[in-house]
Length: 140
Image (cartoon, rainbow, N blue to C red):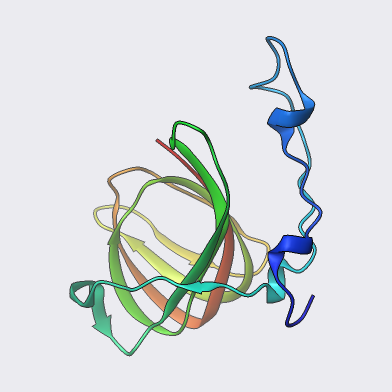
């Protein structure tokens, strides 16, 4: 889908397919052709978060729950070092590599195919070695 947009993607909304008491816990597959090269929108980075380099952040929300408590999308950052305070997030790295240092905790090395869980409130330092693109799910 090089040069294309996400409007032509094949996404099945699980909420539209399921009803009844098991709807919230049912398993499902989301197929999004083009995630590796989808066009993303600029997401300004607070200059106070930049430790070194000139990282640029882009992203695209693919789905948000009606109450805004869950968000799924694609996010990308170019090389550099930034700090962040995390949300409750599960993500899978599509491409690129980074080191994520969790204050008072782990040092996480992430690359293509890695799944990572970050806890809400974690203070992190991201050292992005190669432009990193991830597919994420955030819940609050």
